[in-house]
Length: 218
Image 1 (tube, rainbow, N blue to C red):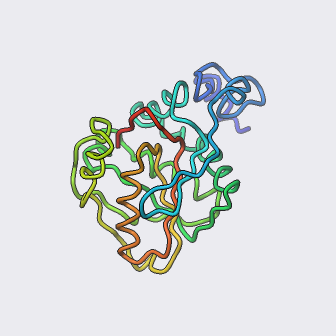
Image 2: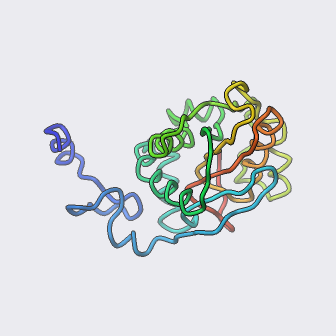
């Protein structure tokens, strides 16, 4: 550990991303207690246009609060903690890809937060997987937050919202599309449709958590 790292740890002791308790020696990212009790999820999630989506956790309780801090409290460093969990889920399900991209937030939300949480996660994940992360999508419409809508409204709300970028980078290739949370799959499905229409061979998705009851916001 560098001198700078030691000083920073003294000033800002590392805390568990889930319960926010100070980490003990040997703990990284999350504490041993949370490692045992956080709600893991190991099933493939199906949807329209993407082959399937993997997510290592359920979107509830401390996981939900951790993701909220990641998105809304300027804690983009959480990406480095969540990425290994997602990478393990990808390996477990045998996901293969040629490059990674992410579901982009609008320019307004990125400006408000200072970063795009899905991009931060994607770039951390790309380092672990040894695959390039490229911006392949742009959000052209600042639509309503998905969290305020039901499942049918969500599908309509994302139609025509995203456009493809840099099509020469992914034509005929397998794309791994990254987001923070999957609820109904409407956003991932629409982004996958755009990528496939623009020439992608296949789109598989990955998220930190899967929700069946809670609602997410882009």
